[in-house]
Image 1 (cartoon, rainbow, N blue to C red):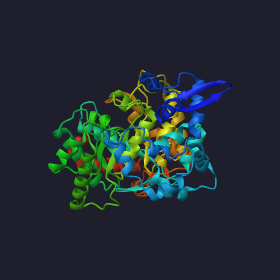
Image 2 (image 1 turned 90 degrees about the vertical axis):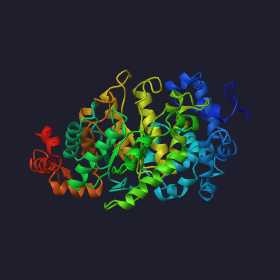
Image 3 (image 1 turned 45 degrees about the vertical axis):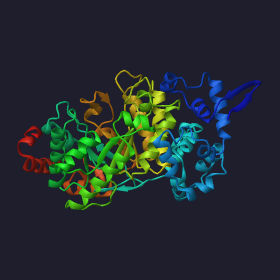
Image 4 (image 1 turned 30 degrees about the horizontal axis):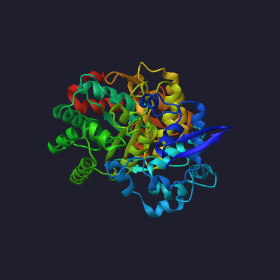
Length: 474
């Protein structure tokens, strides 16, 4: 079905809904690389005008990707709550935008719709929003999850401590993790990307993180961000797996490039839930999955099927939603300038991703990051960090000095997260905050400054727990 519009005598024709969606997207270097982007700003505006008048029901009646040829497409349609979607079927994309931005529409009203919103609908409405719109709509929504603590409440800003080490040195990992704890970071997760994809290495990292968390009674969760099959092999050997991690994408072929399928994700989740039932841990809830995504992943795998990268990102969130994850985050600038060229594109993508994830019901965080060859810098990261904090982002990354020495990219630091909390009056997760207060790291809800009591208490505890591994901490 073709779509047409005329602007000042110039006619624009789009072959199908997939082309309308691609041409209406804000400029992204990845869409240019894929050959699906608008060829001029006039065409981009024309596509937005057409998209605004598209009824939401067309995304169900005319799937962008054949559900008989792609398991993700079929899964997204089958997983929709048909009762929840009923109030939306008569709206156009433009009317849906107005609905979400209406001051009379609150969090409860949006939550009632979430399970009925197809990811393509979320992508479509994001394309019609300005950056301020994306912040305003996302700020209405809080998606709360529970594992060993509770994340996502209003007034809470979480941080993943990311203590990566280029040689997977356990002492170095512990040192970086404790550094983050002393800044009040780590309530989202203490999550390590291993340099070596081996069962022995991942098992050792999971064990040392468990000793740190359990020994000091820290109300947080650990994760080692290896491939799902490696983590499950560790689980089979008896390793403690709090959260099961996997990168995911928005098409079957893109997920296959990651070595995953929907059935593998289902199996992994069930195995981790079963292991939780056997462990002597005071679990707060049963959200056990951790997913990472990022615009451009399907294109990098040559698995985009002519669909723009924003829409494919939304489809990845639709996959994540079905597994009730504890954490989801877009690693927004990690793939590189081939997909998001500069600060403007990275900021835009970060706001889009956060909004779409929140709209679809996800506990959405963002790794505010960029690669060293992108046209961005730490000022760019500061800008996006604060914009997303205003939008109600669940959590950010905490990387020592904002420089990941293993993955070789730039992110946000422990003190960046602490600064955002202080500026906006935000706090860590409630259980984690109580622990920080007990340790003297926080006092009266604020990070202590110039106080050594909390630092000495924590380091002494680590030394007793970890023995020789803690010698680096002195």
